[in-house]
Image 1 (cartoon, rainbow, N blue to C red):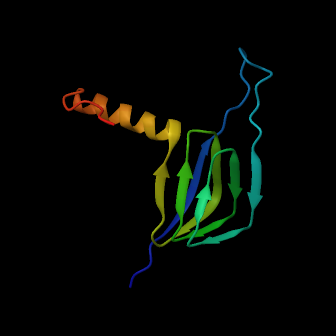
Image 2: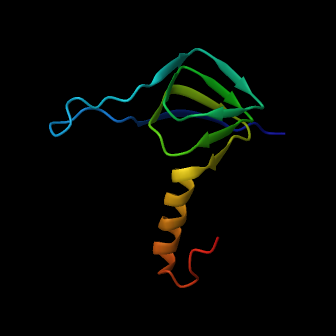
Image 3: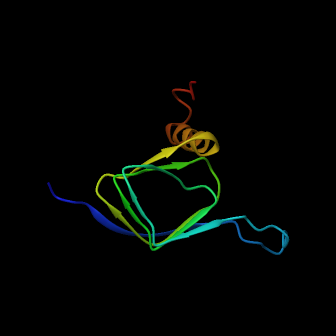
Length: 103
């Protein structure tokens, strides 16, 4: 079976800005870790040089970052909470609310 391999660099952190200089996310940095066949909570985490193999990324809308990480094989995204609601709103807007949002 062929193996999927991809380098990942993605940053979605909340940094202070001119209007909110006091705001800074409390983000945990995780470096040089291997994750295999597990659920990985990504909210409030900054992954550096990590490897993910056949994992499930669970995200509920908080800040996160992946820096020089590697994804191997079947890794999927499972949005929950605010992230899931945002995705549902986005999908509904794309469809013009034609089918409604449902439960």
